[in-house]
Length: 402
Image (cartoon, rainbow, N blue to C red; front, side, top):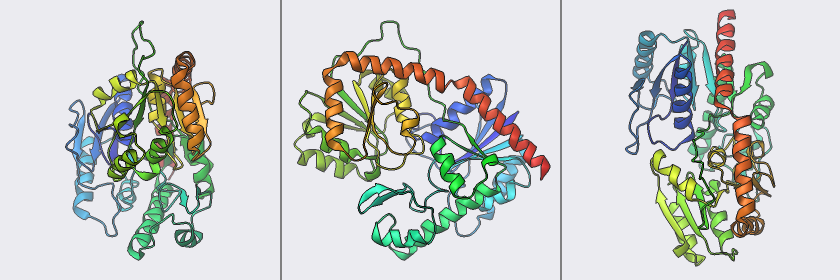
């Protein structure tokens, strides 16, 4: 089978979930004798394009647009003709005009990695007061934008948010099959009107490194955060919690984003700036050593995570995880077995659990070992690849019936 991925970003060293997924699932498909190619819509200086498969750059091909870009669509159609894939697997697709054309030519699978088709604002989070959003998108979102500050009230941004949402719903309905990474996301899409028969759960493929026999728990109290430095990713909550920790520690922050400067100011204001190291984005190969040197990995996201790749990646390195219990986090993090699930926004509880694991290396080590075992059982790469291939076949069958 030949698979053509169309994604926002792609390349070696890219830290985003979509880029990692496309790279990993392509590798796994190719080990089973299948062929892959990639079309990507955004370039970044921080990663290089992989050369083991055909990769084509079509600027902003996945991005939301009011009017169709006929030049880009023609370029994609030319690639599709040349590659002649059996299926097209789309990721973070917000350009409704491209799927409308391609669905007539090939079986289309849409992987919904985020809340593009479940929430106009994105994170499914109310800000006044801070709480998870559980309402169905619709006119009520206009009121919530004003009353709960979940979307910008600027008319052009508000209009764009709703247009992007309805565009994403359109794309999901056009696709022959829709995949998501969690039960949580499937339930949201069912509430949004997609049929149960169309939605498949295919969790992201997590890298499973070979650890040395002498692999042991690190002696230093290193707390690790990996991800986008945005307010909804909870870095502020983590920093506030650290002032309560009695044990000596060092926080390493890997990532970048619009909240970075505010996070640095907050750490300085809290008097812990000397205990925090901001590294920015780093290459995937370099990231591995930071997982290995960490004592605990914290996922303090306050938005409703569709899956959350950082936690399972930490588990692969036998590291315990502490996270707020939001979205799909509880589908891979087992409380008091592989780490701790914290009630959302409770920095006192977060501080207590971080301090507990820093003081009890034996329990942290046990949590980490158990996490790797569960990851191997639940997220086995071969089984996940079989699930994806099954979705491809279902999409082919649906395409032939239309």
